[in-house]
Image 1 (cartoon, rainbow, N blue to C red):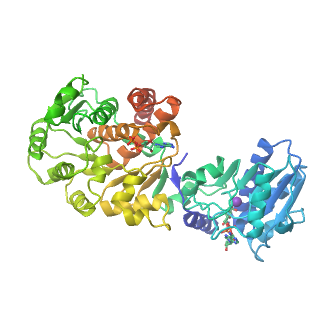
Image 2 (spheres, helix red, strand yellow; image 1 turned 90 degrees about the vertical axis):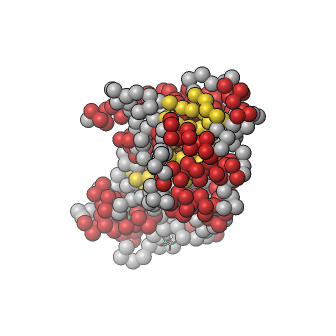
Image 3 (cartoon, rainbow, N blue to C red; image 1 turned 180 degrees about the horizontal axis):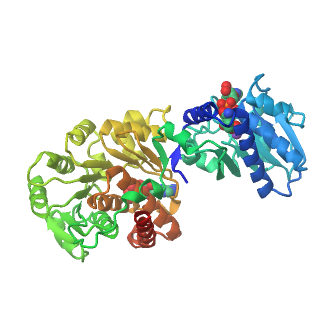
Length: 510
Ligand SMILES: NC(=O)C1=CN([C@@H]2O[C@H](COP(=O)(O)OP(=O)(O)OC[C@H]3O[C@@H](n4cnc5c(N)ncnc54)[C@H](O)[C@@H]3O)[C@@H](O)[C@H]2O)[C@@H](O)CC1
Ligand SMILES: Nc1ncnc2c1ncn2[C@@H]1O[C@H](COP(=O)(O)OP(=O)(O)O)[C@@H](O)[C@H]1O
Ligand SMILES: [K+]
């Protein structure tokens, strides 16, 4: 299945292109959409006493009239409640004229326990909060706990942002067409959609390709082709060497979590770079992971020159301040040095916070030609420290915020949360949907940073490395479930990595 997502505007364009290209006309797409929704209703609610189809004035309502006709033809007891009537000559008007059920005004909508609601009020065209009648319909459905099947999107939820503009239906099932939309994956939209069904209505892949989509659902097809598997003749340094900076003696655990995750994700060698006063405590807890003293930028430079690491993690447990800034800028400056260039820097936690008063210094360093790839992994609080104006712009979705930030920073931005968005400066962005709240546990983000660095060190391009790491981290946490603590995550990665390695081999063989 394709991982592309289409914004509502892109979907409208896909409809237009498909109709212009033929062979299907608009009414054919609408009939296919209505047929897909009715099939879902019949399959999931075979004993519903009655189906109430709520039809809006646009094409979403048009789909609803098709649903009502098909259900009536299937001997289901159907009522249609209409908000306005479709524009004369439109596809929706044709669908309404073919519907044998006489519509009643939405303002009179009443329903009974045991019935089902098909929400075909507004879909891609939602442009303002639901009106009084539609908002009241939401209340009726909610009060009676009626199962709602939403056509395209639950009315009231923005397909662009996943935000509800006021009242919105909470669907049991949402049936969408051709491709998912960002609002199906971004919260709270993902929750409001219930189970999401993607139906093919005859808009071909070639039509979607013409739109050159830049937004994706973060699933393995997006990056499996870059997923690292070691070559037969690999040796440990060829599998990539990751350096992880440790904090002081009372803050070393975060770096070790990151280091372990980098090793588990396939880096051949991992070194914890520790301040002198934390060497003992780190040494007491490390076995396969190496340890190196590093108190100054000169120490870091010497390590890079001699040991040739390809990626670093900086931030977890490191502390906020000038030293953090100097280390980050030092690593980014390796792009300009002859004695060892690093491929990537994952800047997390304190590493991000350290630049709150001087973000542009960081962004300029990341933008310099030949600079290592910078991956920023902020949670919501850290994002607001680095990008306060973007964070505060209520017109922007989480997707748009991550994208704007990535462009400004010249960095991959992993905007974490239950609906993590990964964005690249070139405009590509992916929304992650396989996480679970078990991941909300201290140190979980440190593990994520380590996985990203592990993949960067193995030569994966930065956007793909970040996407793969986010998906794998979420998958491991979701599968582990209750009781998860960050220490469990590096081992919980194993079954996920094994399956992906097998899949990668199939891709390569095929
Ligand atoms: N030929 C096509 O273009 C196809 C469209 N499809 C359906 O068409 C839908 C999009 O249709 P439309 O673009 O007509 O948009 P909608 O049917 O979502 O909205 C119709 C109109 O309602 C108005 N409106 C928006 N929000 C409102 C609110 N809260 N209160 C009052 N009025 C409001 C807007 O002016 C909008 O133009 C998709 O979601 C999908 O269900 C499918 O039938 C497939 C084919
Ligand atoms: N409710 C949730 N559902 C899914 N993933 C979550 C949820 N809450 C947090 N996460 C994930 O868990 C990780 C937490 O990272 P972070 O906030 O940096 O925590 P820490 O600093 O304690 O490691 C992130 O990858 C985030 O996306
Ligand atoms: K709808």
